[in-house]
Length: 529
Image 1 (spheres, rainbow, N blue to C red):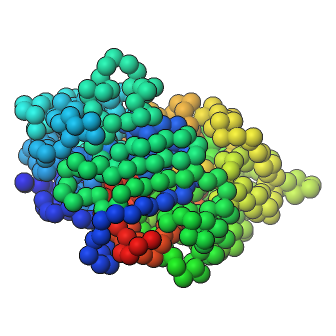
Image 2 (tube, one colour; image 1 turned 180 degrees about the vertical axis):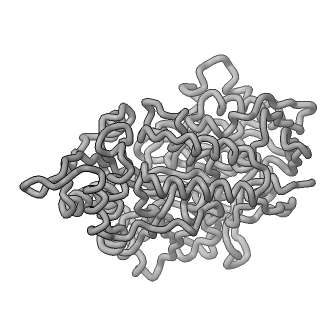
Image 3 (cartoon, helix red, strand yellow; image 1 turned 90 degrees about the vertical axis):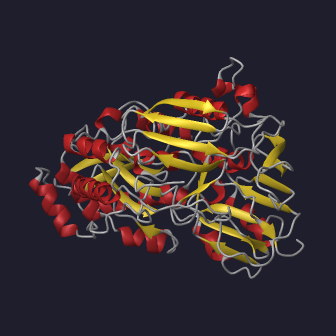
């Protein structure tokens, strides 16, 4: 297999034995046992080809295999694809499949399934940039797929991994029914290490070992049970009592500190680099006074990010300075933070033509927040209200009764400021561009709902999306990040502090860049549970 610097971050990947999910195993892998995972995420269905997010991604990546998967150093590794090769011009990628892979119903996986899967994702998945340059997928034989591109697409390899691109069976989904609403989404036939045994929406997902998985001897576990638990306190109690074995995506600081003191548990913050969850304050740049960059900068100088992390988050989160998560190889470390400076904030507001009135008030704004996550959202919104009062901005904290109400307001541009948290999804093309491209200003949540438009940013992102040289691409993203830092369409607060707590006897807990949203075929018990 010949690889070029056109792979995602320029790392040269070689075909090697699979085994990159976690660090060095603690003991010789043992077969058998059951893993109980608890989660707040309740999926509507289990098909990641038409639905993004944690809820579908964790069970979906156990049920469906992808062409590639990634290790913890951002290197692509073989999975259903045993090898891959770029053309010299970067306009085609040839993928060769393993020849012993079958779906859970025994049907062989072929290149036609690959082509069908990518077309389905192009037509249905919310991340349209993932495969936008893919014009065609040729299938010269049953085990070869050739991706034909309209332009170089360095994000393609990452887009072919884990929860982003499951390979789904054409003989099941290609029956003419709408794939987004296909009945098989709730009773899927995949080719991953585990097959669905039971799906009780909102309650539990039970997965059982697939004995004909294409990697010999895998998976090690007999069963994975995902129990849906809404209350963080109940989740903590379950982990303390040994009623559950793994708690991923946990971000509640009081519970984090409590579980860190349980001797029977280990924990890690690794495994979330690909998701890149950022907590931020977004501005509606289309309406006064927030259409003035000086006002947005003033608000940034008035908010004490360090206080939010230290006091509101109990030190469990980490600072975030820009639109690309700081754990990404593309992050620009030269970005200067907006440190607390009330004098500078007041001076900027004066300069922008907003003098304080007799009562000290310059103007009024509303701030919204996503309901259901008080620590990262509502509590921070309340703090921002108190801080902005110090520079003469009166803020009304506006609650929404549910997520659809909040999302509807923001999507329609009916807001001044809003708390939000958004995922990077590994490559900026997939999860970052959508927030800043002027062409993506539309009434859809998690698009460019800020109404931010900058021709220079549009041009930089267009070039970076197809730049094959890693150094040049990194430089382009550094320039983009500096512009966003200067113009502040969003004030970045912190990386969401995701933790994975697990029974200390559990080995090979997932710590690749996709963490629990990657197949857990290597997880095993070092001793009886």
